Length: 85
Image (cartoon, rainbow, N blue to C red; front, top):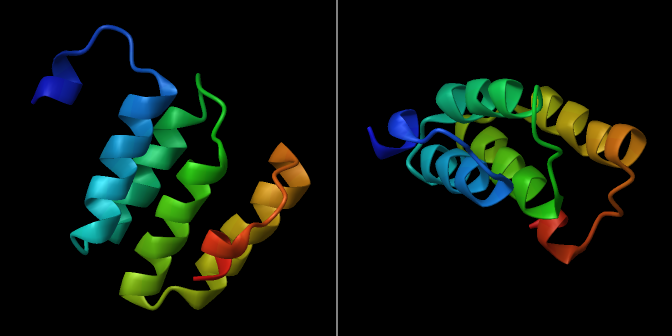
């Protein structure tokens, strides 16, 4: 509810929501949140860690690979150890 009431959502607030959904087994909501986020905010390394956690929890291997590839190709983020975890 707090997130919905925020006028301006920054990278940190989006990452918190995505990671919260991801770590509580709500992968679909995490991925949908990412789709809304990228309309206005550029994701960072933390964003992709959260997405990969979401995919891992739900067994979405192909989707996880898509996000991993997107991270490098579309956003120029070099994979770090936490992206492989």
